[in-house]
Image (cartoon, rainbow, N blue to C red; front, side):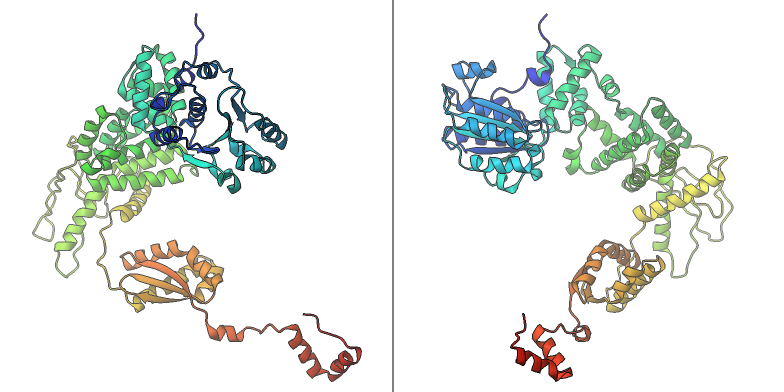
Length: 588
């Protein structure tokens, strides 16, 4: 039986042309070899598993090849290529800086640089994870890295470029490797699966590519693991099961339940996922990504941003047509709030359940807000009380209202066609049908839902003209709010500020000193939100410093030593006589 080699090693690229997803790097290196413009030091930086060390080895082999091809690739048959393949060459040295990061290790390396190669043109030193070197080791390496012998080439590889000393970076030619795209990873996995005799669905390989996050080594490791789990038969379902992820069918079914306002079905769907071992944050994160994909399908121009298997794209477009854009945007807002507060929730299951309950009633709340907006738009100047909520289904006949014109039922073209349950007549002060058997839960849910709808679907206010009086009033309210919240220090600092209105939509916060301006800049985002909330239209907030001369005059003047002495002499003339008698001088 032949020795088993993992795919990440077995299919490691041996030429520039076989490197996946880094054409901008390989083309530059081949042109440098062709034109004999090789630098003495290279810095390869980028995420893990994108080909940094691989390209370093290929470069080292190619520049020492005795008979390179016309395309500047290693021939693979000369003595140098064969010794490189057998790992017996003395022209290429690899150093792991993670475990050899001391000054002594670098001194040992620089001592070897003095000796010319016995065979071949260049001695190549590949230092992996170079950011792990200590500061002393970097300093010991500086001189050799800047002026090495003509036959020595250094290739430094790192995943954390910001940790390398600027003096090292300035001596290297820098190459930034990018994450490998999902399309390139899928194509590479398909070729490897064909060579290994595997049967792999494209959707399964797409899941592996997305899970790897642009790292080819991780993708190949997952391919080996799943192939061992499934005996070489990779389907979408068993790949999702092995990677412990919820498939698209789960989220499609859950979305249908949310659009139908089926609270019980949504909670049962959640319970099914929890019983299968999925965590609540995983479910909510997947639901957020699912709604994001639905939103992208609303515009054909954004279809290229849809990172899903090709066989699912048509389903996403069909489901997107069933959900109104206002519902998707509001749902994303509710899900985002759930994700932000998930870690701080004591009962995490209840936290996720409350999120799903809000989503179940979200479509009705959005439609109610739209109906209310239409009525306000078409109403007379006299205030008319808004009608009760009109659900998605047609309302049963009710008693004749005081107004002769009845409110027409809502018709939403993009909404799904759920079964029409029997709905009781609307209550006088209710905006959502009550949840059976839980009045307290309905009350809490309604309060949170109203807050989410206010943020996501509130109709825009009529834009006012930005005047100095309006801006001053809003700014005074902000300062009063700071005092109410107990932020006395901020309130004191803002008391020294004034505002200046720059038409049409800019408010400039004027401070008297750089310290006060710092507080204004730190509160800028809070000020923008406050002005938008009160004024009803976006306002740009800028800051500036204008020193107040009246304040500067009140500050005590700093005297020089000579001026201090003159003040002392004016108070006591004998001090001046003593200075002259002893011949003393004032130290400056």
